[in-house]
Length: 113
Image (tube, rainbow, N blue to C red; front, top):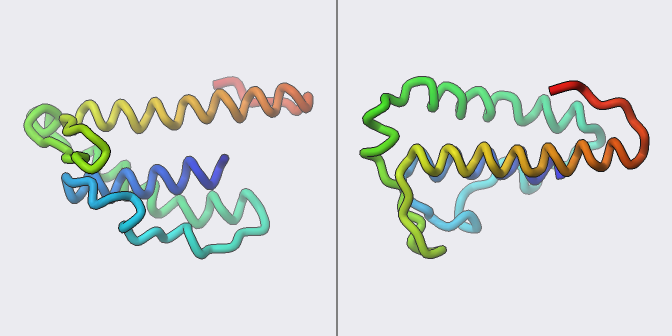
């Protein structure tokens, strides 16, 4: 699940930069062929990509959130940039909840967030 979230974050960032879907399957995916042994390795690899996404978001204006449209016609919709950003955070929060449920199930301490 961790790979899925990090990979999704990377791919969503590519879509946001291009303003078009370009189909996730066609995007270059830096995570796809990488083999990791530990979660730490995976997180360290993903950190620069996460920083790029955060930098991208920091420089958006309020106008950008409504004026820029992300064309994902291949999957049936066109969304405003602000809506896409909310969808990305929703995707991450759903999986965070799933991960916390897994940790709770195996009785591992969880951070308070």
